Length: 265
Image 1: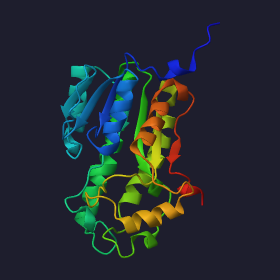
Image 2 (image 1 turned 60 degrees about the vertical axis):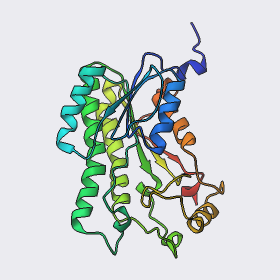
Image 3 (image 1 turned 180 degrees about the vertical axis):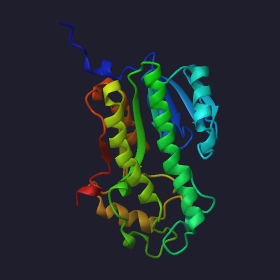
């Protein structure tokens, strides 16, 4: 019997990978990782990355337009072929995300945030899974979650900073955690694997303020992490590679926590 070499598990040649939110901090790093493993990568976002690679294709896609998601995904599959891999790293934000806290949020903003973020993630995954079944593809789907999908936020982190707790973010990410389990249960017999990355804080710009993370917040956050630092996008991308490769062929419905130990204490 031929023994498969372990590194061969990460060879994604002839695999189509759709990356939703491919122009973001995490998405762009995920694309780099996929290209390095020889996948054919399709980035779907409202902004275009400047990548010169014959295996890379950009397609405009606005996941906030919920009524067009199914139509657009079917169009993309007809144009590019059905994906073997779907990775959703998108982060649809409100016009004023800084006001998404307990004291300032309005009902309409709450509804919009849930619609743009939670509903888009769920509907994109459901439609893509059905397309994988239709095309007889043993697919892999990975969604971006957060430690705040399983844990509450520590208010002390935000004292005397411009950052505040989020009202809707934990609701959205918490919903995605159990949606992942339900999807994995439903599509498992079709050999479609669905997992979610629950990420801790990452270095880079804040999605809320679109600015560098405040030093006061950063020091408080790092002091609580056993590894004494935030994570990097490459560390998230490495874990996503594992989940979409044959190296994780018996892993589905899992909440893959990547947080430097934040959630263990």
